[in-house]
Amino acid sequence: MPNKLFAVTALTVVGLTVFGWSLISVPSLLSSAPATAQQFKPQDVWRQVYQMLPDLPLENQYISRETGKPATDNTLVSRLVRYHIYVKGRPPMYRLDWKLTMADYLGANDFMGEAAYPGNDTLRQNPIDNDRAVISRLSRAQRDALINAIVSIFNPNVAAESQPKPDPTPGQEPPPAPNPNSPRQQPQPGDAQLLRQ
Image 1 (cartoon, rainbow, N blue to C red):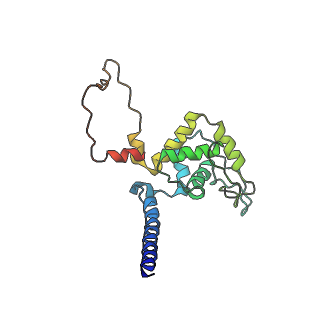
Image 2: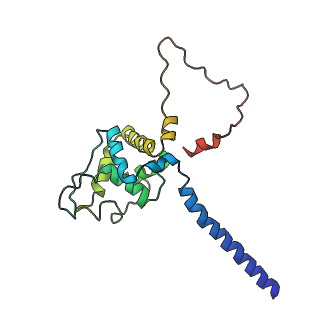
Image 3: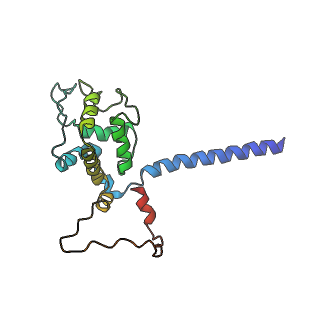
């Protein structure tokens, strides 16, 4: 009987330890964002996005429940950012997570609940249906530009690395293609960070 009691106690201690580590590691994963990403408040990002993409629809014609006036700061992009970060709990620094959010809007990924949608509690009309329609009318290139603009604000390092390389100027030779018979390049310190993009 003492051996069984010891085994149960040991398993309980191990289980609590693992559970405790999992609680500690989740917040540390969320806080592993680059320091530059923490300079921006999510509620202010929309202004920068509209500066980068002035043709993007504002969708800020909704009436505030509190004031009875148009809530001009409650834009499509501000709701998109709040949905992504606060409703879905997705990190704002990575393109893949934003592509999942776009898929939500397009009805191809996760269900979007009307009650939890940003603006539902502060605007007289829930903007979810119209926001989904606006996103679906954007071309793939426009959606990609929107994602790139948001990611470049939250994570400028990733945005700089992903910029397309300029075409060679006329009269200049393009860089040679890699030789498949040449020896493989050895991994370098920091290469694993490229996988996070």
